[in-house]
Length: 230
Length: 230
Image (cartoon, rainbow over all chains, first blue to last red):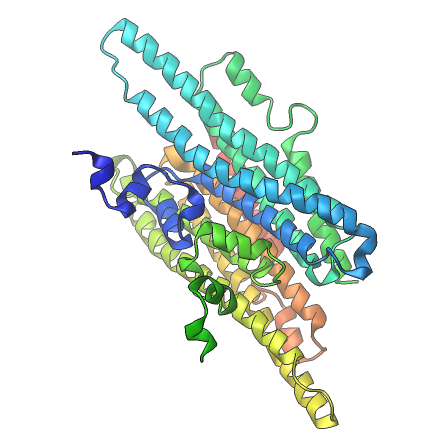
């Protein structure tokens, strides 16, 4: 008797981490709030990124085709395509985060009775931790990309939805901050070495750090606020 | 033939703003990204608050009952109850935001052919705008409350999920910033007067402003980061 075919869809949805897109908002939030550590902060970071990307898409959708914003049409179309890709990527990362967590837990459950077993277990744990840290690292990079998209549409956005550009930037900033926090957690558990060093270099591959990107998001929010109060 | 009984569930879900909890993540994000201005930034703010509250619940759930954290048991139980209430309230605000937006749009569609019609229309628009601004104001207050919950559990949280306290604070901060932005948008459209002045006093009823609450969220994130790197 297989546990997969036997269990209810509801139970399986919790055990096997199905596609997050198919969960209802209530079920996903219940899972997030539950005693199970996954989904947790990593999935929340990815969801914040998805919300930011979706709002960028909305602003583009409500600007494209309006004669008043014709000069920005090309930017809006290109940004819409990027935002849709980013949203899909964010949802894949929410699922990847839960999967990576399962791998770490499985590694910790490996036998450790002999020296050989202990060595193999340590190596598997370290690999699983590196893979787990890679997910929020990719989420952080994606969040930085979404912050860039809010900058791209700031000037040409339909003024009726200008505030949504700020909300998108704010959500992406939370995604970035949360993702970086999750990278840190995994690094703390990892042994010193090349893999740890590579992860510790952060989300921006040295070209910019995450706090600079957070400041850029703050600048988008401030620019919107200033224009609204003008 | 009634349009409500005749339309498909999918179409009705978009037209009648059903309970957001019953939508799948994919459908909700698609609605957010679509050409329709609602759901928009107001609903996103409420969702960010719900994510923050859910993570507070998770941390409490993973701390309650563990002998190591027995000294914090009472705080965790009380905070869990508050976080669950806050999450439910956030989801109601996501729905209320879409409803309030519909009321504003309906008011703008009122006839304006005679002086009497124009006066009645103006009054209805102003009432609808005040009601619409009240929703993000309540979201902002709720976000401040959730930031307070992250402060409450910071010291006693299970160290294995300490990073999730920071992610909760970060999500609540985004909720607050986004909600305040949405209050501002509605204020800009309102005429000067008592209702506008009351809304302009902000989410904290004078006891603290929203930027102070955002700084408190930043302090929670910084405290977690410092403890993780210790």
